[in-house]
Length: 285
Length: 215
Figure 1 (cartoon, each protein chain N blue to C red):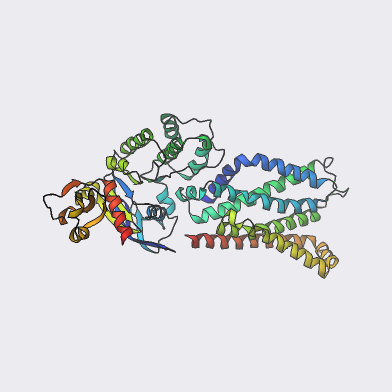
Figure 2: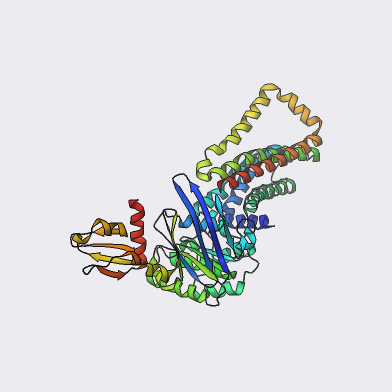
């Protein structure tokens, strides 16, 4: 199995924040969700991958090549979609193509035109007048028009309605189906990932919490529910995070460490549960 | 080569503003040309273009286009070099337009009745280029370091420096300096062009270092 992206021991420090020793890899043909609460370091990680920021230590390889040494060559094969458009005022679809196409050897005019038609983007409307969904589709069209082997999406679905998010999920699944391309998808909306992601990398407060298969993550943790009286110190120690209400408590723990008692309820944890409780633990530490 | 692509990208970025820009240049040219010498027109064009060219940083900042540059198949060197080439080309295009306007339509722009002397014209052009280089070379590293909004106030420093230099020459011996320059117009033309290029190159190196450090 060849890795499209390989991040090894990457550290980057800023005043008041350290992205600490992050390692993960993304094999060819899969979708990886990059998750974590606000300020966890997801965007910093993406900027390091794109060599917008330079790591203090560690190594990042894309397609087996160092991301600093072979930056221009690597970026020929990367498509990036952000949460908001980065195009200038007054540009129309044709201006975007004129601006971006010279940078890519594999830019396919026909494919770009087909994508614009498929996404029903108006050619004569200024991009500043596009809805957020349309802007996202335009960025996606640019990313796909040069036959990118890796798609990096940084919060592309924030502000999009369920229909647009569903469309994006379909496009991404279609994109990786030949087994030669991969997607790194950073998002807060974990329901999108639960449907399409094969791998998850979870960063919390600048540290790597988990990297591996989505199924592995979901199986690793369980949701525990019980009465407030059952919440003793031993159980608190076992849990990654918990919340207590008048009627009971619920928390997250590693399935293998839970000592099951008759009255405790164990439920499979969703990705949202894991992020929520693991972030709480981070906040409590 | 990718710097040229970046230069084109900058032109496309400024495309919606170029019509206004051209109109303003035309207006300034007409305004300045009435009864002015070519030297004065070219000098005024130099500071005016330097002032206007900074708008590319404003547009870049407004649309967070740094993110776009980060995704494109180009490196930092091309981004910085492309920006210098864009601003330089803007000046050169305007300079050529002025020369064509002033040279070819003398009936519209009476040049104080003086015939155009090639040495004098070269001296004026080189002086204009030197002033432009000094201003832009001081401003660009500031914009690269702090961004347009933060550097806007500080970007007047190069203007103040030039005013100070002019005041100093005026204080020391203005006629002496003028006579010295006019006694060897061709030599000083080459010297001014050379200084302008050196200053621009030094500024480019500083800007590149700043951008590298920001990473």
